[in-house]
Image (spheres, rainbow, N blue to C red):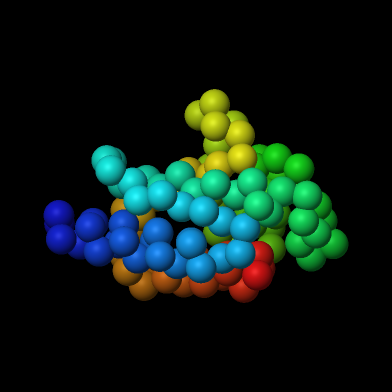
Length: 103
């Protein structure tokens, strides 16, 4: 499992960092990534403009059908919390949908 989680961690970070406006550092613990989405705030996405990561999380859920947790829930506005405790295929599918929406 350690090898699988490391692979998923690296994959998630790489895919997120390919989305313009997203900056994701490499997580050092647990199985969550905390990408900054500050570069997406104020940008129009499918006719909607998010000014907070909570609003952005709602847009991502509504438009890409991907659930992310807004950073406001953890005292980190402008960030999202995303788990990589899922299959490689589901990880790639979800971030691919996000990339299509946000790029």
